[in-house]
Length: 131
Image (tube, rainbow, N blue to C red; front, side, top):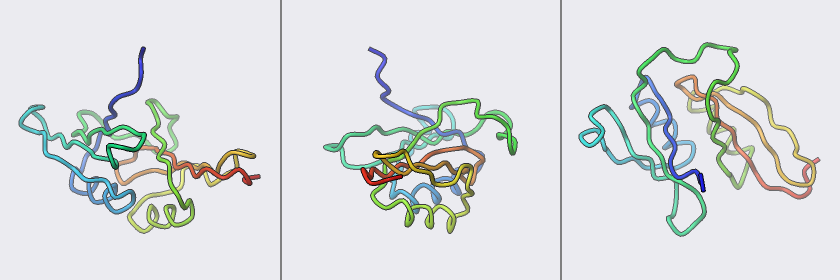
């Protein structure tokens, strides 16, 4: 099986990215730079007893994504309990809207954002009344 077990977010400014994801989603970080041989911080996204995966912030080795370019990577979507308050945290911490909140009718609210490093990610709040 090819089950997703780890993700990496490529960043230019490691401290800025750690602050953004820590403030918005409450993620914590572990310095794995010595092991990886490059600036590399393990990401703990939540309680190990809940569904989800952990990942890492990795020093970007090439150019940052250009504004308005098509997505050329995987996009990670984070489950949230309160879409609107999470969006407010994203905006207050330097994020931008890539695709505004929309309904997945009968399932959830979804939207996409750009982090402080130019990467696109999604947020998803389950809501059977979404329309």
